Every structure is written in C-alpha cells, then in structure tokens.
Image (cartoon, rainbow, N blue to C red; front, side):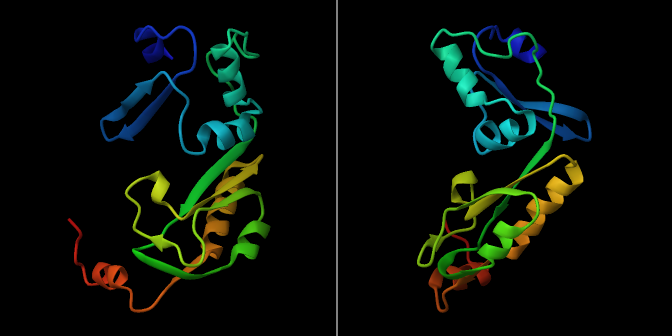
Length: 174
C-alpha cells in the first residue's frame, strides 16, 4: 500500500509482486493494473467475495466502488491455483479429467489442450496446459485439493515426436 501511494497512484487499481528472499521481502513489481492469471478473476474473488474486475470497471466509469474505506480486503476463505504442464510434443490423449473435476474443493478446471494439441515446456503462464482452482475455508485443504486434482491429470504424448525426443535427449532449442 505504501509503495502504491509512493508512486502517486491514488485512484484506480494497483497490484504488487513481492518475493520473499533470504534478505527479506523484495518488491518485484508495482503496477496500476489488476493482476493477471487467475488471481483477479478467480482466486481473490473466491477468497474475499470481492469481484475485482467489477470494482475496477466501476472506477473506470467514474462510479464509486463498494470497498473504498479499506486499503486491504481480508480473505474469508482460501483459494489455490495449480497448473498442469507438459514437456514438448503433441497430446495423444488426456486421462483423469473426471477424477480431477470430482476432487474435493475444486471450483474450476481450465484445459488449454486437447487431443492433437502441440505442447511445449512452458516459458510463461499462457503455455501451461491447464489450471485447477480450489476453494475451502481451510488453507491446507484448498492447497491439498488443488494438488490432488492436478495429480489426477495425465497428458499422454504421441510416440516418435521429434520435439519430445529432442527434449528427452537434452537437445536445446535456440
């Protein structure tokens, strides 16, 4: 909050990334925008019951957002997001979707791949194969649910795929 105010951001949305290091917390980014990924649209709204996107739209339209009195919003519940990824290749089949969807505390599963999709080891969030989002009143259970659901998903790659073989052989792409 102090960093946002130090930058002169006084109206609108702001987000910050903090990494905890051996030397203590380090600020990675402070920006006048909503967080990307699943934080603004899913995990934060699930845990706090505050729809950040709706509140940001109100500010952009000159309307008064619901929560203007507090700089911080308490989390009432816990929401976790976990991704499932792949090494390079092409998806032959996907197993375990039904078990993952039925896993405790799962709110959403987003698949970005299907049979025949070319995949790569992700270099950014967009290249992940999919994500699981959970919700629980208990932090440990939300985390366990997300990891349990992700562990149910098996991405089987096609045989004799050059990208897969090169990756397994340790051949790096430029």
